[in-house]
Amino acid sequence: MSPVLSSRRKAASADPQPPAVQDVETERNTESVAGWSTGAQANSAAMMRWLVWGLIALGPLLGTLAYLSVPTTSAAPAPKAAPSAPSASGGQGAAGFASLFVATYLSAGRGDEPKLAAYYPPADNLQLDGVSGQRRGEQLTVVRLRQTDTSVWSVTVAARVTGATPTATPSTQPGASPSPTAATDAVRYFQVPVATAPAAGGATAYTALALPAEVAAPERAKSPELVYGAMHPALPTDPRTQAITSFLTAYLTKAGAELDRYLAPGTRLTAPSPAPYSGIAVDSFAAEGETGGELVVSVPSDGTTLRLLVTLRATGQDGVRLPLTYALTLKARARRWEIASLDGAPATASVTADGAVRSMPTGADAPPASTSSSDATNSTLQQRSQP
Image 1 (spheres, one colour):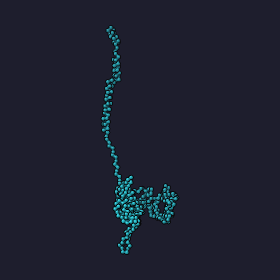
Image 2 (image 1 turned 180 degrees about the vertical axis):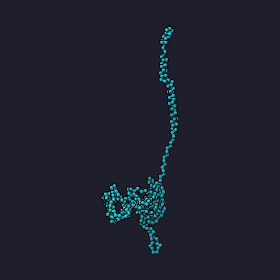
Image 3 (image 1 turned 90 degrees about the horizontal axis):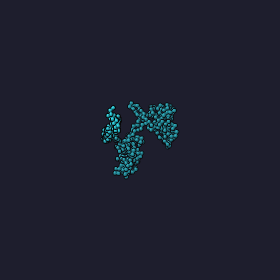
Image 4 (image 1 turned 60 degrees about the vertical axis):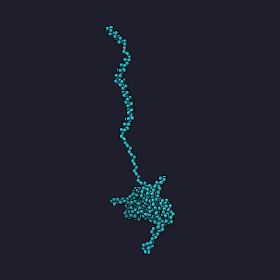
């Protein structure tokens, strides 16, 4: 080896590369091995920061766009309440008001104008005739109640007018005695228009729109067909006669003593108390579905029911006999008849389109009766008010 080469090698080995250069090279090698340079990391971090700031800046705008992009749905309007029918309240009060007005009207005489004005204010201008209290209205009963307008009721009141002196008119026939133009102690009918209006505290106020108008008696309804056959004598040998006689005797003369022994299981009845009569006698009865007066001496199988219409005479504590009628339902059990119910009314029958007669339910099986508040008539009271 030449002396020149040998000296160069020695110089190279004596002057090694600086450490800083070695560290840079090491970092470069490391970065290149990881596949990610420092400049790329810096650029990526900057981009992420700008992206986040951009989203923050665009947030309100994006929220507004999202809100506007949702399809608008209007809320369904609340259903409007259907107009209610005119109120039928006040009918009972109008009936009572009209009854008081008619009673005052019938007994009014000279000087009683203010009494009528309490019901009908224009009555202050009237000039009444007759003596006050000479006539009277007794047994006043509302026989018709009809609503003619939203707040107006037409009330027909029956009254037995007493104390009226009939006037005689000459007869057209020679020798005939004068005939009275009006009967005393007769039932007459007066129609009163009554207006209602709200008053303080939720009450109802009433006033008459005119003086009473005398009208004819309400028309009597035609009696419906009943399910019973013809009336026939209550024979002592008939098991039905024995059952109803025993029951009605305990019911009317013993104030319900021993009443349960004649009732079917599940039947509960309360007798009048104190006992109103001292004895009874069953005269006749009509049985459901019976066409003739055939002799009956046996009781059908258990569970069989039969409706009866019974007439009897009850002897009062004063010895006077009073006729009574009862609608009963019997039920067979253990070879004897028992009382299943004391019906509220005789059982009626309806005729179908083919002409067949169908019985209508009564008592507990009967549907509720439908009544109209605009035209209510109490037929029972009406019949009692007939002369």
